[in-house]
Image (cartoon, rainbow, N blue to C red):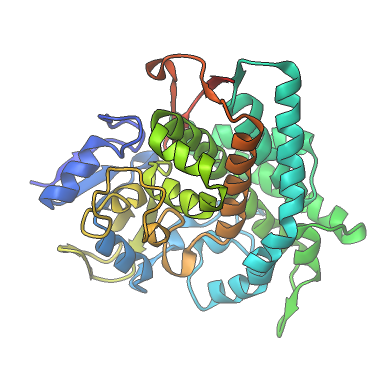
Length: 394
């Protein structure tokens, strides 16, 4: 009989830095398991690294179930690449690639350093203790997102409230659709404002981009802009907060980073591999009968590729449960997914986490927890895992 696990976010963890216990057990014994998703949908769980990578690159598994709700006269607007497969998906990725390239992010680095530095000086000016989630991780994520997209902090606060409604465990289908509609039309207003007054930001670049089909429409740009906001909202903040927490709990690794700041890029990849930030994983629908690992998936069935479990697979990452900032293959993690839908903003996320860690340790070399580690409260919803608060002093 196939085992059924509860919705992501409801499974117990033996350690605050580990994936759910059930996911680790499933990875070891290999028995088929179904996991419950939002609105009662169910999917076959994949936890092994090679199975996750293969499925996410397999054209038999589609992203088409991630369609934007019908927000315009009962129809979904164009440009929603979350729910799009190649070749149409490839066209939008190609248009966006330069905007999020390593080269572009290097140009963006001084702006991130300025934002991070200003926030750290504010914290120092108030004195300790400080909550590094409320005072640092969340504000950094919000300010950089605003700077990148060319929006305001008031606009970001509105967006945060809307996303909070979307990921609530008790959200109804009606509220879900209405919230997306509100978000999309607001983004459309922002796009139209950028059309008349462009700036040095991604929304303005979107409107200037074109290919053989010509420029993007306002509707396409609004859909893409909304996706960029959603994709970048939580991962960076939780990676910063949970990353600092685990480093303060692992003094030998923290000392490595303090002594060798050049280690920070590899450290970021190892933290992304090690930390179980993504609760949901990547969800796909089989377009026809297909194999996923040892399981046969019928056409129309859903799979849930657990990225956090795959990143702890001993077959790929020896001694996977040990944080090792010098790990040689840390960059092979799947925290950003894999295949055609690998996170477009991965270079931006790496940059933000790296600058945040480097500058935080430089400004506060004596940083330490202000409470016992057991008193640091976890944060968890269906999509993400981290810490709700991180009290520190120096």
